[in-house]
Picture 1 (cartoon, rainbow, N blue to C red):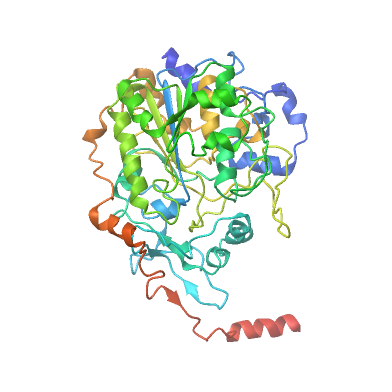
Picture 2 (cartoon, rainbow, N blue to C red; picture 1 turned 180 degrees about the vertical axis):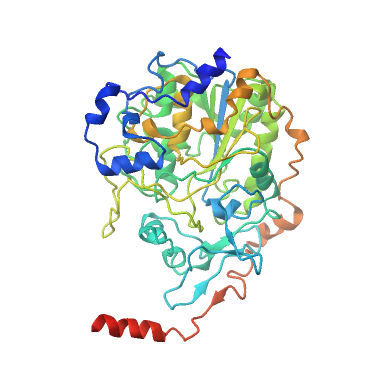
Length: 496
């Protein structure tokens, strides 16, 4: 019970680094900070600062989550929670609203084109995504989709494209749905900003994007003041590897920031297939970051989404067959929403630092980095995962950093990871303390095979995504787009 008590205390620590606990109430906090803490379920006296450690009673670098010796991170690309799991068959998630007359998913808020017609939600005709007129997720589009919280800009923000309202079904992604029904998932896991892949992945490793808002943004020489999680690992002798498809030519996630020692990065980089060899041999490092094939397996538009699901299946089964399974935790999530619809408005967030967004000429900074991006799927797969659990706490990519920092008591890098919820809610700490695995044998779970069937793969050769939008999913205004009587009377009243 002593081990259990020490583990449980990690999730309950409320010590504020930099301030005596009795003095915190006397420190004036900006209302936006208080609001962001409330979103996280925290109070002002729990506010932590960069450089503080989760448990000040232990030295930095101390392993405070014994029993989980290997953490593996797989971040997929460009799909919202609703796009993947909106129809997930479990009662305790915040998925699609359902029309009880038709049994079909419906958008929480009507999504209209500029001509007044409405676009319904619809299942994707095929597992291939369109090679043209695909979804849009840049800084401007994402904020237009959010539309100050009204969440009615998905079609307009996507450039008048209906693709934003498509979603995938269990028939198309059977393995992903099986994982989502078996292992703990989070239905309040948001990407870190309303923007694209690169800045969101920068939050994953550095808890800030240093002003970047877009993929391919030409900002060189970036390194957060406290470095990245990889610098932290090196400082505290925590072993790590970056398994990269196409290594060493392919750009990997750690490349998005300047690493203080490029030789160190080269030493830690490995081909993706080496992950399977190391897994089978039981030689994985303490932390592994997987960079999948971003042209075939990442599930980004216009890829056939089942190719990525097959890779997810390979990773899960490789780990579960490994001699390290009893000591391993796998986190799978998505970097950002990809322009696909989600019905939950992202809440306010703590800005990681004082750096403002570097936006294209003529665009707004909006709220800067004081708001999360849209929801993305997230799950934790481990013998120590909770059973029958959906975490409703608010998370973002820096929550993964917070978990790593909690395990090894590492100093926080920015305000965002310092105060992020740490994902311990996904882990059955009591089972871990008792050394009684919840999922000792994945093969006995009946997860089934991924959706990479001959039928689903056929569209890859033709690049045929089917008819988008499907016939009958667009509804023209009943009055031809002219203002209705109620609208006219409203205008008259306003003029008077």
